Length: 594
Picture: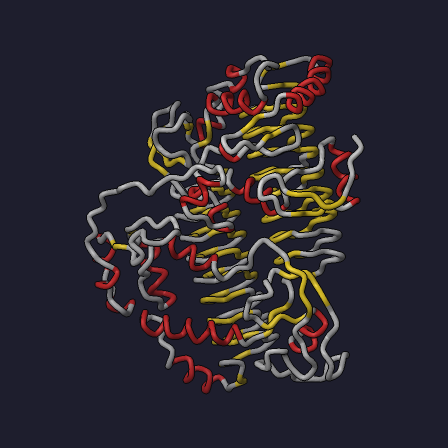
């Protein structure tokens, strides 16, 4: 399959994008054509197939027990609880059907997808976590999502190997933390952003190996620092005592001050650590990987997000460890899966599959849903090895000759991910809304579905304005209240209008000296999302102008190797040119911070 590289127009947004010569070696290796959608449209399309946070009451279609589900009421899906779905009490092969060469493939696949029972929630080896989703090895996790081997986690997302975490995002190997973002190896920290190996610290940005630091940025190996000033232990404790975080009014004032301090601090062009020939953000221990975000241990990977231990793959999201030659993949995987093409959820150990969902320990599948320990199947029907290998080229040719056409008139031949209108979720139910937010009108105009908030009929017993300012004034009676969210569904943040405080949560606030929240968990989550960088890179120049930053806000502490002239270095960065942060190249940044 000979393909020409160069610049093309995206068939979705009509913007130009470039396919590099090396990309075609990958496409040929896995037997797929070059993409027709640009990278940004491709990732948005995949994200629209992952619902993490929109959960609904339902009953298991097999055992009849109450369960929460990622599928909204009134839809076409039969949900099974986690135990039933993984059991031997049903056989997904019973839903198999012949391939019909008179109809588009995606139409047939969607009918199969709706017929096969679906997992109500994605749980694996997890306990006491009914009100959470996308968990593995988790315990006592509440309204948290994408949590791995963690315990006592509340209102958080992307939490790996952590204990006692609340209202946080992207934490690894941390304990007793609140309001923290994209950090590792923290203990007893509040509002720690993009930091690691910090203890007993609050309101810190880009700090490493720091203890007892408050309102500090860009520090390394420091102790008892307040606003980046070195103090004695007694001086530090006296300064911090004036910043009582248990009061909401005080906390809001401190957060505003912290935000201004962060704006005047240095920002490395990208959070890239121990990487060779790689671009992206929050990327660690990787080699020859481009445009990858929140990922580590990658090799020869392009356009990855929230993934680990991948090799020779492209366009993957939330991919598990050990995958190789994966393409247009979202959700799961791992256990040495190989040659996984166009997968909306892969459990584990997949080999040489096309267009699958919820399959595990299986290989040589095309258009299958829910299969385990099977091979040589098409649309959940069993074939011999010879029959399967003969049919696959015919099906690919048929997909090209009779493509699926969506309601927007876009065509989907072989090589395209699933059409967005076939997603089981509305756009605003998925994490696409978190990273590429749209209004209802915009989403519908682009061919996505939209779900208006349910009218819950909550009887709010306490408004956010009526909550006590200080946590010391919140008695146990607050556990019985239904609290009105301050946004009251006037935002575009999946607001639930009302929320409750649970006992473990109240205990946590008291221990960490934090006031009661005024926003529902979803709205709080969106406030944290505003502090992370987008999944996109811009080409920029270093803002070091010689003796300081080009905007005159930051003054360099030493002379850099380029002297008093502007730094000539350029780079790819997630900081857009119109943002106010001071962005330095790695060399200038290390001269000031490391």
